[in-house]
Image (tube, rainbow, N blue to C red; front, side):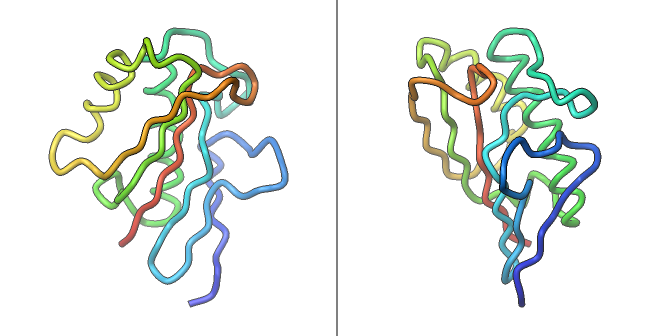
Amino acid sequence: MAKKIINSPQAPKVIGPYSQAVENDGFLFISGAVPLDPVTGDLISGDVKTQTERIFENVTNILKAASMELKHVLKTTVYMTDLTYFAEMNEAYGRFFKDNPPARTTIQVAALPKGAMIEIEFIAKK
């Protein structure tokens, strides 16, 4: 199967030279998502829980565009600017993966695009 670019109009437009997601050989690689309003493209206000929830809302729409759901996610990588908010992120994250959660790595970074507190990338497979 050839590489297929996946874009959802219900998710924020990309802010650089990359795709929302790329599908190849049944795998879906979703670019790191920051908590942007899908209409305005602006960073949403709120704490890390609110930002995590917005990321999942946006990514769910990208998954739908590829005929997938959160249950298809195999791995996530979470980037946070401050791991002291790990518990709050984990609580919000856990509401989206109640059963059989994917593998995950969480990393603290110095800064994220648009001043976000969190960014998450996803790998899924049908």
